[in-house]
Length: 128
Image (tube, rainbow, N blue to C red; front, side):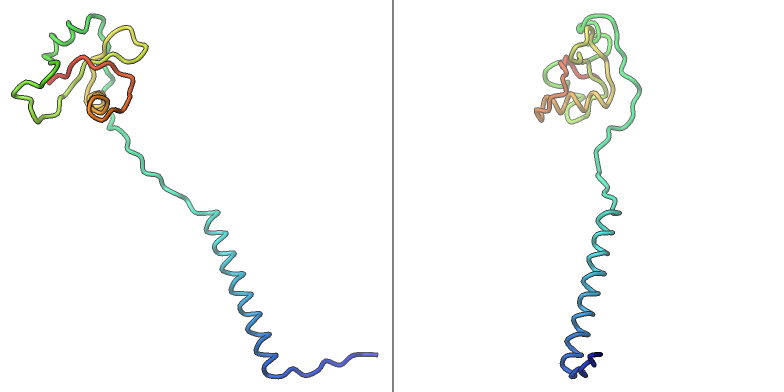
């Protein structure tokens, strides 16, 4: 009618206990890893250009801007060799007039000329 449970040997008891313990540890570790993966926030570092005053768009010719702001084309003047230009005259893609820009546009112009990055600029000259 009722089956009586056979007494376990020490070996059976040990194997059963170890199996349950290992299963619990694996379960906890799996749960921990899943929760960690779901709640982990990744931080992506991205270079952001420093803020600058807006570029000044001036109606006029490239030649007028270059002359007005003491700019140069080609090699830098002797007093500017090894120094970072402070401004640049560029024409942005799709724009009808040139722009006199500050440090941010200088950086983009230098990247385009020396590193081959395309920022859709026509660089006309660098300025002090």
